[in-house]
Every structure is written in C-alpha cells, then in structure tokens.
Image (cartoon, rainbow, N blue to C red):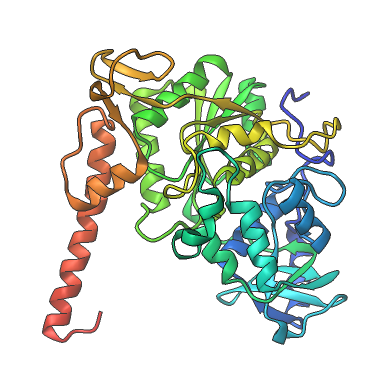
Amino acid sequence: MFSKLVAPHGGRGLVCALLHGNERAAELEKAKGMKQLEISDRAKGDLIMMGIGGFSPLDGFMTKADWKGVCENFQMADGTFWPVPITLDVDKSEGIQAGDEIALVKKGEIFATMKVVEAYEMTAEDKKWECEKVFMGEGEESVGGNFWKIAPEDHPGVIMVQNQKDMNIAGPVKVLSEGEYPKDYPGVYLTPAQTRRMFDERGWANVAALQLRNPMHRSHEYLAKIAVEVCDGVLIHSLIGNLKAGDIPAETRVQAIEILIDKYFVRENVINAGYPLDMRYAGPREGLLHATFRQNYGINNMLIGRDHAGVGDFYGLFEAQEIFDRIPKTGDAAKDLQCKPMKIDWTFYCKECDGMASLRTCPHDKESRVILSGTKLRKALSEGAEIVDHFGREEVLDHLKIYYASLTEKVEVKMQGAASGDSM
C-alpha cells in the first residue's frame, strides 16, 4: 500500500539502529568483551530513539562539527536540520579514543555497542556556549541578557549540561535493547514504523501530534479537538521517560488520557501513545525537537500552544511558535524540517462564553477566564487544594486525586516505620 504520510526526516527512510534475532545475540556476546561505559538516563532514551528510527537520520552520537552546527545554526555538518545536540559525555579518565569499540550500559544491562570515531573535549566555556545557544531563547519576552544571572541555579536543562563530563564521544551505535518500555507500556509505547502502519491502515495522511508531559486538562483537550477538526487524526503523544522531581508518573498520565479518550473523543480519530525520551528542558528548541522526531512517526503537524515545553519563566509565552519562523531552510526537502507547527493562541475556559475559547475568539475580560496550566494543576492536587470548575474533566481529576492520595499514604507509612524503628 502506498503511504501518503510525510517522509521521515533526512531523506534516508527510517534509520533504525536496533538489532534483532541472531544479529543481536552475536553483538551481545561480542559486547561482553568490550570496555563498558555506564550511561545516563538521557543517553538511554536517545539510544532507544536511534534504535527505533525516532531520531532518523541519526545513527549515533554527534561529532564536534555536528554539535557546533546544531548549536549555532540548527544544522548538522551536512546541512540537515537538527535543533538540539545529541551527544554522549564521558570522563577523560576513561581513556576512550577514536577507533575504540565500547559497550553502553545502564544498571547492568547492555543497551548498545558503539564504534568511536571521535573524542572531543568539552571545556567549561564550551558548555556555557552550548547553554547560551540552546537554552537562552531569542524571543522578545525571554530572559536574554539576564540568563546567566538565574539559569545555572534554576534552569534544569542548563544544570544538566553543566554537570556533564569533560569529553564527548561520537560514532555510530548498534542498539540492543528498548529497555522497560515494551513491557511497561504495551500498546502505548509505539515505534515510528508502528504509528506509520496505524495511520496508513486508518487512511490518515494529514496527522497532528499533541505533546504531553503533564496530565491532560481542558486546554489540552481543546487543542486536540481543534486538530481533529482540520486533520485526519491526532496522536496524543506523551513523554514516558524521566521527568523532574514532583512531576506525575507516566503510567498515571497515560491512564488519565485513556479515561478522557473513552468519554470525550471519537476513538477512531485519536491514538494514545508514548515515546521514551527524558525531558531536556530546552524550551523553544525542544519544541523543534518534538516536531523533528514526530516527522519520523509520520506526523506533519505539531500542535504548539502557549508556553510549549516551557521552563519556569525563562521563555516568552509563544516563543516556541516564533522559533519555527527563524529556522534555516536549504530548499532540500530531505534536509529541511517538514513537520509544520499548528500555532494555537492562549486557550482557556470562559464563563461568559460558557465553553473553551482563545484570545482570538473570546471578547470577555480576564475575570471570566479559567487559565489552565499543568503546573497549577499539579500544585493544587499535591496540596489538596480545591480545583476550580472547568479546569479538568471530573473523571480525570478523580483519577489523579487517587494517585496523590497514595503518595500521602506512603509518606504516613514511612513516618510510622521511622517512629517505630523499622527500616523501610
């Protein structure tokens, strides 16, 4: 069957580094004799995405030329668009150099082997420069020149880069594991090949994605339904990798989405799925990354609303929309980003309109509006505070309240154990 979906990014089809069957078994055996390098959670997610084709056309970690081009111009050394560096940091004392073959390991599991083609130093100045390029933001409302006065202490993405080791190593990988995701999220963890097949089977050619890392509230629901009206279907695509402390676990969020779809969507027009990355907290650039790998999943429209991938108050409310207008174009469809932003204005529930609305459709004053955000919802739930009407669907809020009640019970049990001298 001929597919009408957007082509994978990079012009090489889906580039999948994941090995199977006898080839995988042979590489696992070979890896046992290699130098083993313990990797971060972020690198684990990156490897899985390279394995399943989510990071096409990447087949390994970036060279210094790629790293520099991505930071400076949104382009790898060959001119292919890419918005955020995909690098692997190591301690210089490991002694890894070009020509080495190493095994990449996480908590005893071999996730991949790697042929090192380059090892390059990352000085404090290099890291600072990367942070300025990737995390600073360029919109009128972003923190701009005040960035270094507040970012190192408060910006989780900057902290991550600053804490990286003093070298990066580059080279192609052979991926040997998809980690816990197939087992823990059956039917939700989907590869690009699987989503493309599902879209083709449904006859979808024009597909939108809704990015989620928070529970789905009424504003998210509204965005998804706007996309359903103008596209063939929507992939509600949740991050199921690691988040920061205090965020709601993926399993709870995925279940909440399923409750919402069952009661408030035409199921044939929506797919609930997850992808295995950690947040990078790269603000507008992370919005571009979301669009880039969604293209590999077969998606040609990325919903970008207010403060997409926002971090605290570091970015302007619509900076993640504006950045799409600033990225370079080569004129080569294979190298340029083909997934386009669906730019949606600030959405909210309006009591006067008696429904969901946006700044483009609602004429009423702010006192009539229920402003929705994942941060406000998490804060209210964690504090047991009253949640204002129309913030979320009652069925979803009840599900989330059960999760927060379980946290309180665990704390109480732990405190009782400590008081009685039991070790927990």
